[in-house]
Amino acid sequence: MLLALILLLAIISAYILPWWAACILAFGAALLLGKTSKQAFWSGFAGLGLAWLALALLKTFPNENILATRVAQMFQLPHWTLVLLITVLIGGLVGGMSALSGLLVKRVFEK
Image (cartoon, rainbow, N blue to C red; front, top):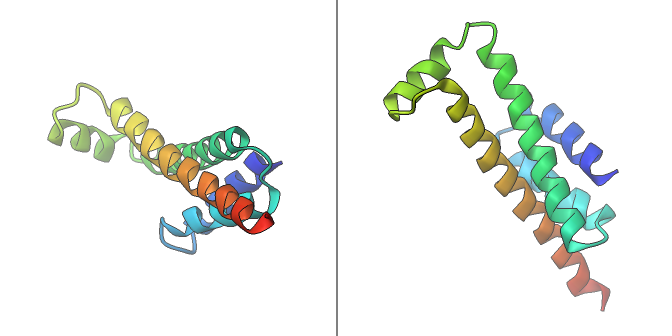
């Protein structure tokens, strides 16, 4: 449930708000629905990581990976998919930490 909510909010917010707004939404979702630290982190990681993967693929496939290939060359990476992998990893870590922070704030105010 938490994963689906974070994924949905991240994809919707990407078209309206700046990139960091998804972090605030993951924080809020875990604040409301989070149960364990493990669940909160991995739901945030997967939710934001998959959202960024989907959004990056929606941008790179129509232009036949031209921009992603040039960015990979600029960073001296052998293939454009490594740029995509790094994007997913960064998005996942940001989402996981945001969701975990939301759960930990919830725990502080429960006691």
